[in-house]
Image (cartoon, rainbow, N blue to C red; front, side, top):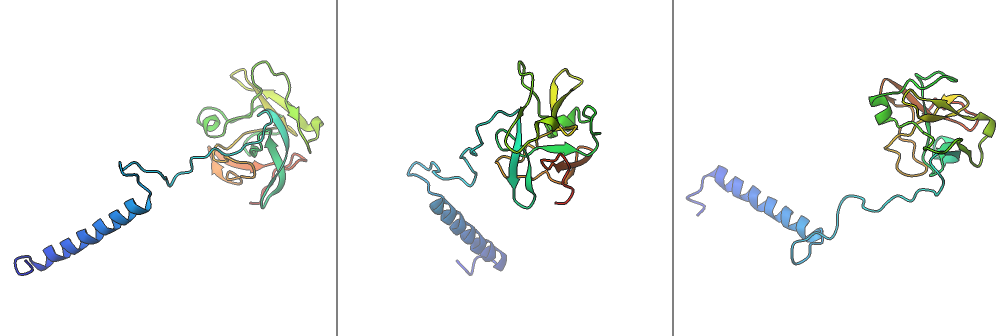
Length: 179
């Protein structure tokens, strides 16, 4: 057979054989059942364990590399939008508010909850143009970053996104500008 096949055909067959070997190794190591159903996945399928508090609670939480910062009742890091002005309503609307959801009071709730480590005198609210009420701290409207999925994460710290920069806040209500 070697005499009938040219050099490029032999190279192609060798490559195909190697590829088949790799595919077989992946299938065997992935833990398939006899029916071919995969029993393992490269994706995380367990839910992150969030804290039990309400999303409209603001409290102090630890983030590695940043220290003690503002988090919500579930332990997720809160941010300010550098384009906002302290003491004024949010400037983050439309796609900005989709990418950086504002921290809102749910319907029927009249005030945010000041959790452990928070000065309640710095916690407040501000109306949004859609009629919802956004939480503020030291006058800064507060937001979440959807890529922070567990307590202790601050993947939005210092990034430029949605037309401005985003920073976590200290419990004194000041932005942490360093990453």
